[in-house]
Image (cartoon, rainbow, N blue to C red; front, top):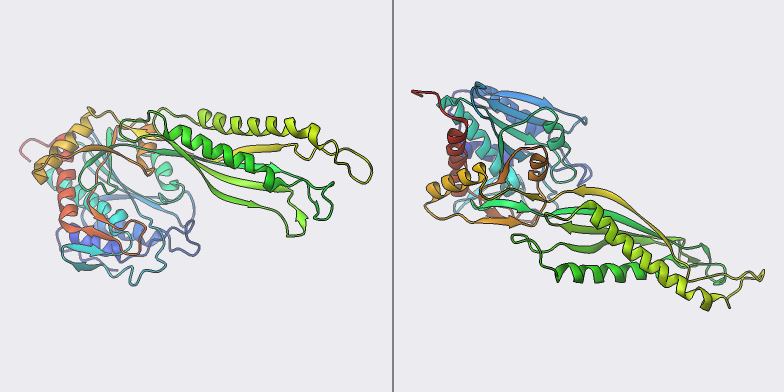
Length: 408
């Protein structure tokens, strides 16, 4: 797609162009196009509008691009959005960017190319206004899987505050949940299915773990919880085990997701799961005497209720929270209320976002974006008026936060 150099920055046309570019995350959907074409298009757009662009590609074929403007004479504001989308299986025409009744339809329109278009437009307008500080737009790869892009960008870029433009319907998100992914492997002993004295059924023994997880979830959800996010939770996501129908299974692996709220830690989560394993071990030990009567053909006693298991953490994403009286929160809320003419609520959201990485890097961060619907669904759309208002709010916040040159 070739861009015209003789037109002023236009968020609406840019949004259409971005939605028409496939950018399915290949780590989510094998064969997905990835972010290269999106990053190239944004870099070209930035060049045509007098903005710097910086290419960051820690993993081949998975680039992020940072678009920046400013003189470095004031505070810096980072605006953030991700380039990648989920898959398009089952969608009739995912990249048509069809407009109807004030909506733009297509994969990524809502999550979150509308936010990207608003960020880039605001940066171009900030350049025209001659702000003292810098506006930095981080267009990152891989948010839908492992956030490789955000982590790579933060190794090179910092700011005095940040706005993540995930869709919020023009309300102001100041907290979100985190998660811990774990695997628990319960071990048995493989043997022919006709030889119960030799085999140990790992899948059956995993039942104590499954029951313990269900009980833990009940306890968590009965707790006090976070004022914006409620309580943490835990569930079993995946389970696999066994070799074939005629054998005792030698192992059973359980995939667990523990959703966390601010104040909950990795150490605490690991301790919860270990307590379940310890209880299962104790329960197995209590049954060993009962099993002494079972012997194999050599006459050796086999404690069939013996329990052996281990856990490992596979991925951790911390929860996020910013004080509601933080300057960037108050600025975004104020400008959103001015732009929309309505009060904007401060709230907490359940999905994890890159805001957690920005906050962990010491950057005061808030989540604010446009409206629409259909994230990860078969019909996805952005509300065009909402994207326009989001862009205007971002520009107003940048002007107030970064400062404007006298007479500009």
